[in-house]
Length: 186
Image (cartoon, rainbow, N blue to C red):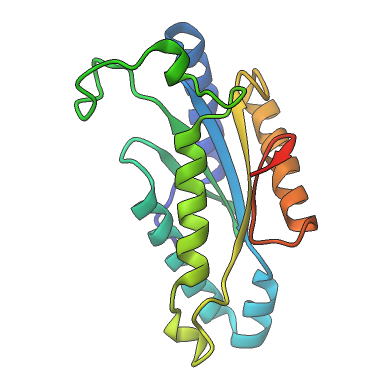
């Protein structure tokens, strides 16, 4: 439906990139998000419109992410993005290698770039005009999400999935339309 990777692919990639991160000191951050009140759109406008919402969210997320980040729909209206840093030898857009401390993120293990991309997506979707939702289609869709980083928030794919999910649920409980880091709001 969305053209994104599936749950199984995302989980397997996350496991593999964490193993690679251990060897190469890469930064890996998992972003889980879902569309706030998605059931309302399906119930009010029908499943065809719900499908269009999912497709549009996928398109917008692709536009916000870097080419090497892995984006997947992992169920219903829930999505995952695996942000990771390319090693210097593969990242042609970065002519010089950043210092190790800067690559790993200055905010207690939470990479700033993943947070920036996630929040940019949240802002774009909440201000987009979804004409298929009628005259009131501008600014009605929002997303809530959670970010978890290797090795700060977990050492395995399962731990990162669990921690990002907890952060996402806390963002929803706190009023929705938010991105939370594990342990604190953005």
